Length: 294
Image (cartoon, rainbow, N blue to C red):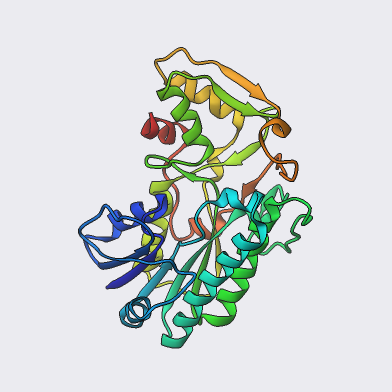
């Protein structure tokens, strides 16, 4: 099968390539150097299209669309350009998918649920105030979901919940593991009582693999997470410390001292993963994630 992966140089993209490469012909599109010589690679900024990108979408069987603008933190200080880049990338890809009637798996985010405590795919969604820059990212992703639905006939949308594990270099679990590696204290922001649901990268990739194997492009939306891994940031930090041989402490910083005044914090977010679990049941718990990262 010919599979095109946009954003193949990212954390999830690299893991997907490794899972799919043995049985499929993989092409990746991203910017910068690709460290995998076993795939065909196009180094290209998808805010603009070229004939190579169109040719590859024309000849592939499936597009797994992971790519987004570089530097999600830009949403805090470059709202307009970041959103414009996001929508340009997605419109470019979705229009080509429509043109050649291709199947697509599009990765969205749990951020679209705003402050919903127990997030179900059928929930009505209310995005937070535009005063808070965080919700610019969420609104861009939600708009992109609508674009995907309206332009792509055979689609799946995945709302990812804190996918992390070995190879992660951005998320909260990575920051804790990195602190331990450097013999630094683990830093928590605010009370540390914020609750998130972690998903091991191996489970996220295996779910996508099962979607492809079962040829599921039913136009549905799936939460991708593991309800068993719902945990406060303080408890997560304590788990890291417990599983580490090093003598590490926890320090606290106020959110407003670190993030911009436009930052919004979420106290609790957990997904309903019933639909996902009908296709694939996650296997890896918090302790497995931590062990893979230390």
